[in-house]
Each structure stands twice: as C-alpha cells, then as structure tokens.
Image 1 (tube, rainbow, N blue to C red):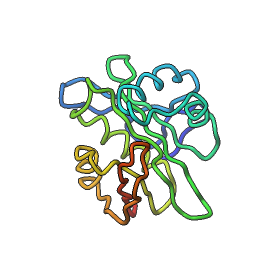
Image 2: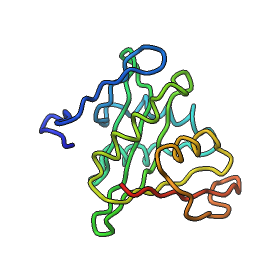
Image 3: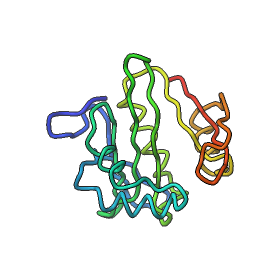
Length: 166
C-alpha cells in the first residue's frame, strides 16, 4: 500500500466498520491534528503523555508513518511508526485510542494500517508490563515478547519489547 501526493491511500480500503456499527476511517495525520493528539495523549497516557515538542515532531518529521482514526467525524485514535530503513525495521512509537472508542477494533485498524505502510520486514514496540489490554492486542496481531526493559517508564514500571515479522 502507498499514498498518493494528496496523502490518500492507494490499494487499501481505509474505511472499516467497528463493533458499534460506526465506520472508522484511517487517514494520514498532519500538524492540524496537534490539539486532538494532545487530548488523546492526556486521556490515554496520563503518566507518560508526550510533551508538546515531541507531538509536533511525530506529526512533522520525515520517516514517520502517522495515521489517525476518525469515527463520526471525531478524532478517535492515532498511531505513529518510526521507520529505520538502514535497520530494515520500524518502531511503533505510539498507539492510542480515545477511551470512548476502546474495545471496538479502532486500535487494531490503526496498527494494521501502519504496518502496511511501514515498508520494512520487522516491527517493534514497547508496552507497559501492566497494560494487559494492549499486550493482548499485540499478541493477537502476531507480536512476540522479545525483551524486557527494566524501569523504562517514569514511575519505574518495566516495558515489554515486542516484535512482529511482517
């Protein structure tokens, strides 16, 4: 899958139906999504919300796949993948879904769309060891636990490093 010059997906239906019967649209995120992304970070990651400059970076830096999910014209979720072509891999830097849309397949839709655009054979991500919901999602999508990073998060919690071969 690739994007045309306007940022539209070519070769993928970017509209899926989620459990509530609503449609989720996966589309490129831009700097115009900064404020909704700030709200998402606060709602999903109260202990680890990225500072403003990191959010600006993830929305503007090269070699980053950045997608948003929109449900009923509302910002529902976001994923960013940091592509590292020389290493033939990418890192999912963040994946979050607004609480009202969690458990409806939005996270899965974002993850699969990002994987399709990364263009590398291997993807890694980190997740809080206590985040069993996210760990289940990743395992269900084929990610395997490959390492643990002790005290990775600000409060001293460990991170699981997970990997998937695409």
